[in-house]
Length: 232
Image (cartoon, rainbow, N blue to C red):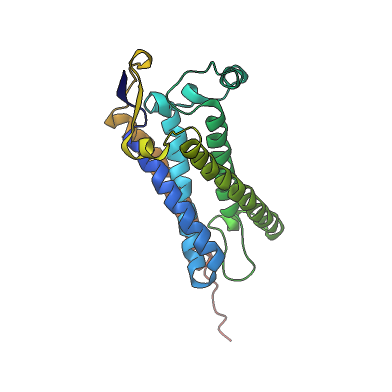
């Protein structure tokens, strides 16, 4: 007999779909460029906030949102490959994918904050580094994007594989938060209350605010000292 259990909490599901949307928009704005390049930068800051939220939520969120619940240790990977792993959250191989995606996004956003395109765009924190370092980080930004694109393709392919071959829909649980499991394998999960959500949200907001404040502080129009006009 199967029972329905809560696997993914609401904050995690909101993070997942907001991140997917933000990444899609950032790809479009980055490829189109032109007048949309400023939005590319803004979306990058949004992605930064989402990543910070996910990192904090990985420690204070509900059971299956926590890194400790799904971190792909060698023992867990070996058990999964032998068909001995039992769990309701990310399986060890799926966890590898999650960590790789989060890592690639963090590297992409981190480099993008200091990047430039030598035309009309400068990362919000590019004023903190010299031009040569900004150029190198711009190259890294492009390189990591290619890695991220490959990871996204693999992620989508895995979803299709599970749906077609294993007859397991991974999308619906990420929409509803619920999953059907055998009754004897159903275990209670710890829930994260509103206070923990507000803490994670606040930390994320501080990160975004810090970047935005950095832009204002580094704005040469605002920060450059006034130069007196000589009275010839």
